[in-house]
Image 1 (cartoon, rainbow, N blue to C red):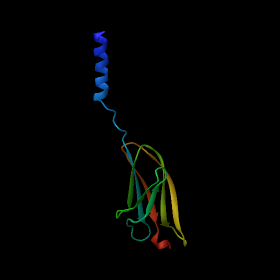
Image 2: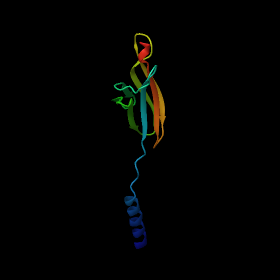
Image 3: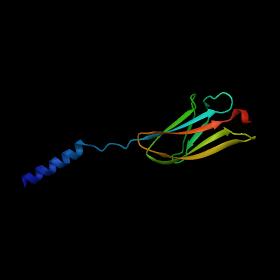
Image 4: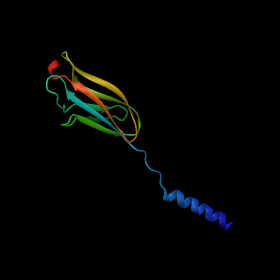
Length: 113
């Protein structure tokens, strides 16, 4: 009986001393650059991660990044110029892997207005 009790205590101790590791996150990087003439990063573009409702704006390097669990996500990029009098909103789906940076590239056409 004592051996069984010691065995149970040892098993419980081992389970408590090795807590589960949290899942590795992946990164969605959204890059927005100008097109036509000189290429440069575009800041101030609104980017939505639809599954979480999180919204970010591209920074001075033209990047907005989201840290997420592995899975499939939909990104919405607002107010891109692409010819014609209206700004465009673009939705894209991306598969994110743990520990990786997955990049979506968009182009904003300043000379297309």
